[in-house]
Length: 243
Image 1 (cartoon, rainbow, N blue to C red):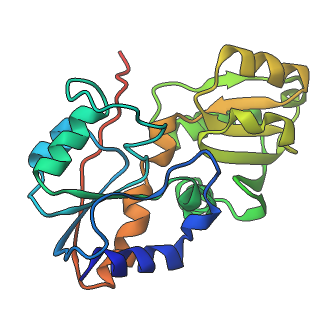
Image 2: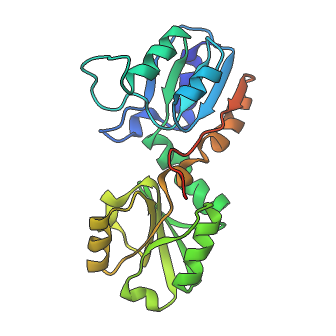
């Protein structure tokens, strides 16, 4: 099957044109006319993964290996070091990032990982309803995402039971002003995000960037099996270590 056919199939289940303007989803390396017999799924591209892959493979990732504008390719620096290895092994790459967040990832995490029904959606924000004390909810969240502890911002509202919760996988603190909930679950929460949240009486729980998006391959794999192609889920690794 040609990459163009696989791309068209992926575009049907998660249209590339709905990605954010700053994103770089789509075919990043490869030739639409190339024939593909094997597909590998991974949240990221790293050197260990590329070393383990066969040549002439299509790698479908969540995060784009080429994100900002590249002005030069110095092969001893990231990401040129990875791109060089991919070209040498004829490894093509399609990234499904913000488009997949909107169509699949956020909803999957709410329904399948946390076990709640979706109450409402607003772009990258998925809402669901609960009736639970904040501390109990935070422990439940850290357990669901395999976190060693719950990193939280506890607002005055949290003295009462939480009712509505919002979730954005990955890094969603740029959306803070748009959240209409008692608590917001997202990753990469910084100090100034915490200060802003406290000022608007919004509780936060950091669900981790990798931890909240690591389900990408698991979600996409069943779709690719329907194409009759071998699809392998790579063992993606969190770049962070908790000690």
